[in-house]
Amino acid sequence: MLEVCTTCSQQFVPQFAYQVATLPQSQNGSAPRQFYCRLECRRSALGDGGFAVKRARKLAILNQKGGTGKTTTAVNLAAGLAERGFETLLIDTDAQGNVGASLGIKGERSLYHVLVEGAQVDEVAVPVRGHLDVVTADATLAVAEIWLARKDQDRDRILCQRLSQIHRRYQFIILDCGPSLSLLNQNALTYAEEVLIPVSCDYLSLVGVKQVLKTLKDIERHLGHSVSIAGVLPTFFDARIRLAKEAVDTLRGHFKERLLDPVRRSTRLAEAPSHRQSIFEYDNESSGAEDYRKVVERIIGLDRPAQRPEPRVEASVDKPAGLRAGRRGPALPSEQHISPE
Image (cartoon, rainbow, N blue to C red; front, side):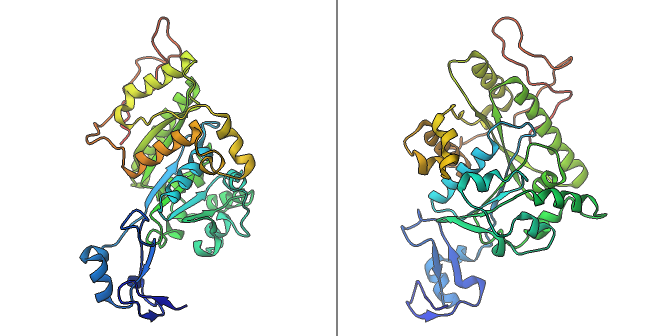
């Protein structure tokens, strides 16, 4: 396919990786994808920094407890990043297939074909919106789980091997993880570099945070892969409910600056998937859109504090404590000192 060089306007057929550059729309107001017929043209437009190897940020959305808003967060975070011009890939690793249902898509091939049959992501990903591609999932992932369990070696790293070449094409790769500690989730965490933990504002979700932290420690200890916490996101927040405010206060005491502003309980957020739209498409002026816009800003660093102290989850002395008497909030249960880093 003929393209036009951004620098000299000469027509040519791209044959090498250096001849294509993907930029966010916010840079110079120029087109997201630019083409260069020669090295000199690329250097003239981008400078020496234009030859640096760019890697996608790989972010898993995980909480082993169900009903915390993982898919809602994954879909709207990915949609918000794409809306800002970032090339984004959203991967559904949950056999329920809720990502595809939320956006009204069903790919002819799914993550199963990538994992088991070795299909290329380019062949499987569905272009959904501008700058947003999705790899869908369905019930065949249950078969993929069995296939992974039967492998003798590297069964925790299959996803990492299959996706090894796509980090240069995208700027963000978002993985929506299922509510379990499965081999699929282990593969997702071995591939990801960061994790965002949605936490609904109730006591059992605080228990789920402790399980996630333990899982991250186990991944690092047994698989030699470190995953950092991009943030903890309170969801289904209702300021009228005392338990919700106490849960947020408890999380803030443990995670400090890594606690993101809560996503308020919103009817519009609940309605958006039934219309096959992200919250930004369904009601861009709603409280849900406002809250997830803040999440997007924090993830891309526009609203990131200059200094982020290293939070630690302190141990509770005895068994997990529920709601205490008086005004103390629910304690975050922990059997030992667990560092979120």
